[in-house]
Every structure is written in C-alpha cells, then in structure tokens.
Image 1 (cartoon, rainbow, N blue to C red):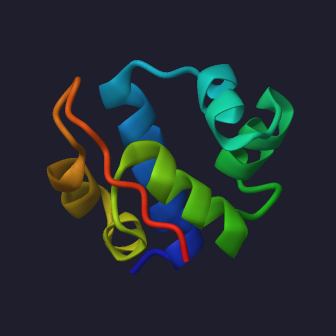
Image 2 (image 1 turned 180 degrees about the vertical axis):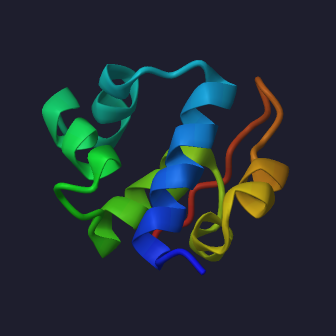
Amino acid sequence: MPSTEATLRLTVAALMHLTGERQADLAAGLGLNQTQISRKQAGTASWSLADVDKLSAHYGIPVGDLLVGVDRAVHCLPAPGAAQLTIHP
C-alpha cells in the first residue's frame, strides 16, 4: 500500500493532467513557485498540511477525498465551469 505522501503525489498528478494545468499553473494557484511544486511532486520535498488545504480549495475537493486516492479525487473534481465551494476554518 503506498504512503499517504505517494498517494497525494499521484492524485495531484492526475488532477493536473485532467485540468490541463502545468506545475507553474498549480504553483500560482497555491501561492508557491514552480520549483516547489516540482520538488513536492518528485518526492524530494513533502506536501504540508497547509499545502493540502490549499490543494483542496484550489481543486474544490474536500481534503479527505484528496488523501483517499486518485479515483475518489477525480470523482469529486467539479465539472469545468462549475462553481467551487471554498470552506474557510
């Protein structure tokens, strides 16, 4: 069974592919730079809990569904053009 970190990397890669985003696009959406995204996706840097919250808001997918895996996250991805619900603690 892959680690949570590995699962998240796969999930982010799938979401980027489905949405047509590049690392630079995702970085801009999360307030990071492309190098940081590259390192996180390569596994040389870890996704933080704050990053996971930002990913959740960026893609409009609940945190739990991001961490379960690709299939669940892809199923929860809002349709293009659909309004995304952002929940702030």
